[in-house]
Amino acid sequence: MQAQKDAIKFAFAYTGVVVGAGFSTGQEVLQFFSSFGLWSFAGVAVAAICVLFMSRQTAKLGFRYDVVSHEVPLHKLFGKAAGTLIDYIFAFFMYGIAVIMIAGSGSAFEESFGIQPWIGSIVLLILAFFTLLLDFDKIVSVLGAVTPFLIISVLIISLVNIFNPEVAINQVNEIVDINRTPTGLWWFDAITYSGVVIGVAFSFLSIMGADADKQFIARRGAVYGAIIFLVMLLFLNTGMLAVLDEANHVALPTLVLANAIHPVFGTLFSIIIILLIYNTVVGLMYAFLARFTKPYSMKYKMLLVASLVIGYTLTFVGFVDLVNFFYPIFGYVGVLIGIALLVRWVMNKNTDKKLL
Image 1: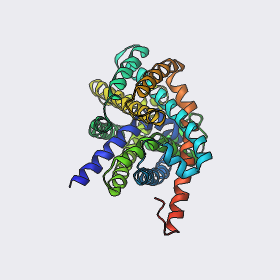
Image 2: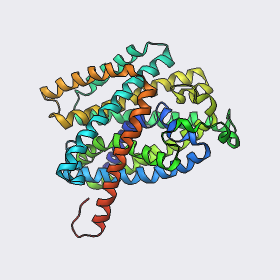
Image 3: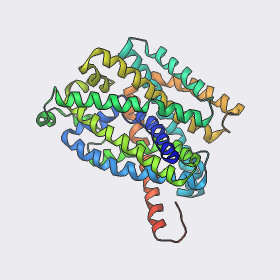
Image 4: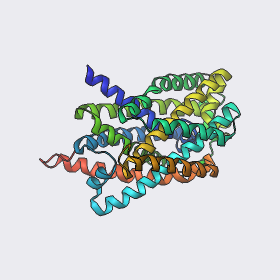
């Protein structure tokens, strides 16, 4: 019974980390899925297969080698030389996604509450700073706390818009803008999106896997988390198609879904979006800091302050532009990790020596 509770806690924390980068604002789902119209459902199916497999294998890898950062897993997957190169590239993009989320918080504060973006970003940074001074178990608990509210709210805003669409499902393909997608290939962008998800999750998921008491807790927690994430992705994509015309013209399309129900619900969902962005910033920043310093040491605290300050200055580039630049490239890095996990899994099936 306790093991099941631990797996659910694991799943909620995992979901809390990836949802912030995966679809909290809706801009990600719009670009990688909904802009393909009805083909987006095939894209979600492809993403489901990739995310489920990669999440499970990442957690198992972290547990097996009892890791404290993503350095060891990458060395095990790619070898010392290539693993070191990918390690630094990965850390750079992981930090880049955290910066995107900080910029996204500014957009969320502005569109929801009329607060200047720079003020909203500072509020998020202060919250992240104090959270990152907590011990790891407390961080996991904090990250998982918002997930139940997220699940309920995503289902509500999606279902209401699905049953009361502004755009009929048979008219969706008439208004899609394929130029909003990264490559114009639905299957390739779905795989790339999976790479973004596993890229965001890889380091923190490896650490959580190592923190689990038993391998099946790590494995099951990762699978549960992936399923929760993918079900919400399916519903959100369907809801996005229902308001596609309007969603194409805003920075935070999920707020279009929420405001279509009632402005009060839009305000409540805005708070959830900000909390999810906060989750992702905390998850990514902890993984980034743990890679280069011993957690909670003086160097950890100094790097924490420096990275948050530098990250804040980079947010002035603009949220949508940052998504367009960073997400596809980071997705390719994640896909590379996914391929390595697949190769290792195949090798594991053909040897007596357990590699995962």
